[in-house]
Length: 177
Image (cartoon, rainbow, N blue to C red; front, side, top):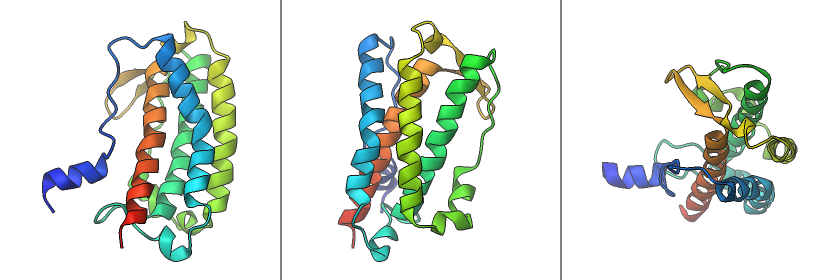
């Protein structure tokens, strides 16, 4: 497999590209993606067998089971980051090693637990972001790995992208033998 083919499997919908100007249209579109994501995810994985859940979207990639658990963890972190940025002045968030988390024993649990978690965290996240002001979307947190400011309007787009990114990974895994 070539590097280019591997890159396409890693980022099948491309990498997140922040618009030059994030408009109310972007915000509404991204909120809609986050609102619809839990049902799309559940519909995609609801009737999978244990064998299906062990399929990967690329060589040495995560299994479908790991992806579902990862999304629950990652989106929980995002929700907390939104709240920190609203309640603190440019907080430095806690980063975590996603790959190490994906190898922990709880990623072997039934995916139903993470599907429920995704439903709950997305309901809370969507309600939260719908309730913050345009000015609040200009608040930010500091990501310690890059020492850069991540504004909440951008973070909303990143997590809408992240949702679609992993849906596509699961679709690819389901087409592999």
